[in-house]
Image: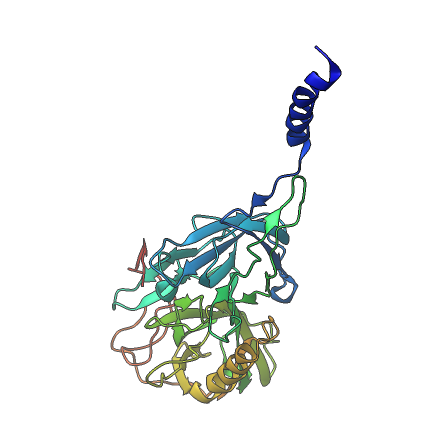
Length: 353
């Protein structure tokens, strides 16, 4: 076989070999990679894991991702989503906090997991543990959603570019607020030192919509117990206590009243009751919290502080005989006695408000 006669075969062979080394265009995958960044510093948290939920505007199922680093990537189909993020996971990781309605953005709720049901039917919620979360505030068009954008181009072999032009940056808010109740007392010397001051707060929420951070549940009761560290000879002093709550409702269709009930055992073993409406104080803080949220400022700098002033009455050294004496030396009759054990005859149970 001559070279001239072999030429067509060689050309065909080289063409085949060249085809093996030719760079081919590859289509971009249908689910592009989206960069996700989360800054937990404003919530004063550093969770080991956190969960992000994507709720598509169409009828497709929600996507849930559990992340373990502040910057990561995930595969997400192009589309419009409303997005939620919380520290921990939905199933565990946050004591005293449980989740329900997680299949839908508008029904997603976090709530305190256990409560005390008092003998009179009142529900007393246990303090929820720290919870932080956020909703992505707006999309390209200003709606409360996120729209992934990517270039539907073509990748070369070995090309690590993903043609993604959008990324998501989260700054979560602390959803559990610290509630301080401070009481300034005049005639402190008439307060019996051995007995703690007790009471309760009415009107705060037992659950919260993570999406908008708007508490929605019926008002619940938080029990109060004040340690008294003032000297027994002091005529004026201050007592205070603190607890955790999902905070005041920020957007309710009807106004809600908030009030504090207190009970003081006096030196003559009588009980002085005091109650105060603190709705105005709650409204001031709630307005500041809502303003910060509306402006996208999500920090843990605002706590709810309720301050009261009480003047104890001068005890009667010779009170009328008590028709129902307390064999343990407690307070007097039906109208002025308190139950110093607020959990007596109460039943503890898991409850979803």
